[in-house]
Amino acid sequence: MESLSSYFTANPANFTLLAILFAIVILYFILKKFIKLTVILLIVLLLAGGVNLLKDPASMPGKIKTTVQTFVAGGEQMWDKFSSLWRDTKDLADKARRTPGEINKLLNAANENVEADSKSKTATKEKPKK
Image: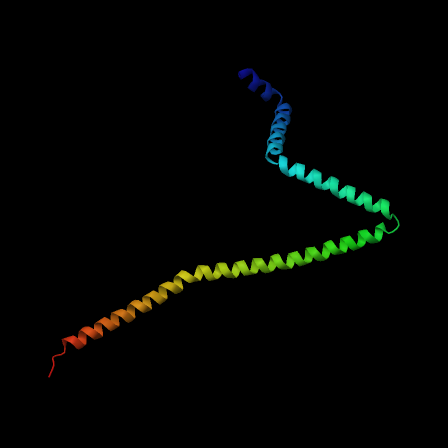
């Protein structure tokens, strides 16, 4: 073990490469399914593009332009929805933060009313009858 540590202290570049290799292997095992999905989607996308290119190569730039415009419009719509979702979430968080204080105010007011009612009842009971 000491010889291994002395080797890596003498050769820091090798230690760095080994650490990078371990990090890549760990990330690979963690993201293995995501990487497979990405590769499969990329292959399907390339195959679909190749089929469209072979069917009608002359109109391909127009198709690409309309596809890009569609994606840009969809991205803008998604951005609008997510930004409104963010605003709504912030509003709900503000309301949720204020709610306990408002409930406490209502409970205090209700307790004061109950106490006032009980005091008035005891005051009427204490009055002697004539």
